[in-house]
Length: 444
Image 1: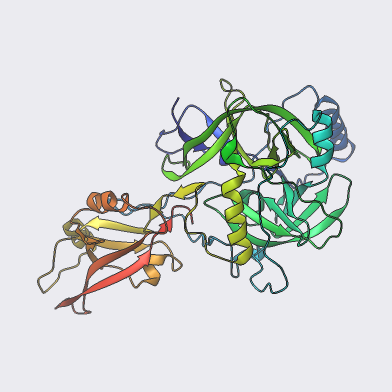
Image 2: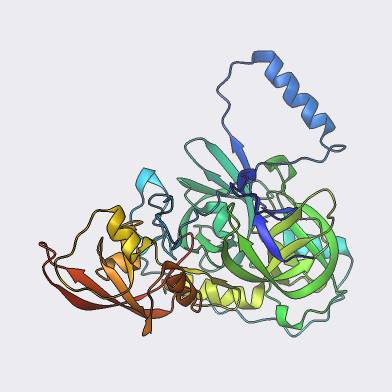
């Protein structure tokens, strides 16, 4: 089976036909406002859907948009525009989007310690559910056009920290956390990381109960697990599904709609039914401990029982960094593909296309035609239009494809240097510059 996963963000079709014969679905359930006037007919249709929901499989539109295909190419390629999401969603975002709280002074840092004092046979599935479900909640994230539904769970009762997926809350204006007993709280975003797809929320609440943390590194194929979450809509909050661990440390290439790999994730595979809306909810072992965070599933008629969860042991390391406000540069969960965020030409072709006629000698290299946005690391390092890139991290490059080859030897977050030649205004001379920066991630 091919492990290159084309993401099912809104079922966008690749322009070049380079797509696997299945898609995966980030399991947020997106609901858009309907401003059409329908009156009684509208409510009648809703009533019919409610009556039939037990018999029909519901396919929900997922709430996560595909990453733009921004990468170095041999010719000027299309740019996706400015998408300046940082690894922590920090700073002011346009459009009134929710941003992480960076002024925290009164929160203590939690300590996530896996439980070792219980066997994985405490009681019946009902007993496990009753113990665990009080820690689980529905995440409702509101946008300008509607809202999306996801799941979450308490990881620190003292400080009111809630774990969920990044894609559940990404770009939202407001977030509400609702427990299965109906109590509801406004939530603030503490931190979020696109690469690992993890986020931490905070609520002001008393009497919370944290879900015990298990050890995902001790999981074995064949162990029974359950998922708790809110598939499809709030009226199904607290749904439990049961299955088994089908595989561990599965490495998958996550691709965008154009077939380009944006990251590689290491996940737990389970046949436990995971549906849109389950994203961010816990995968729980038979001791009642969370061992994974449900994130995605394979979606195609010929595939059944292929759900995936982020391992909790590695996830807790990310939670700690997000809570402390630290930058996420690496993890055992995912590694993002690097990008420069520029379009380049082979040098002579570029000079000819832009009708640039140097009046001095110049080196071999590639011509920078454009830079994707002012937030990119390479722009902040000082790269400018019509610079000639001569070396990438000490390796000479004289073609666009050669630059891509060198770039692909690294991962997002690695520190690299570019050597560039820059003409003066009259093209009568130039100078060499060395630019040092950390590589951005594709889709960041």
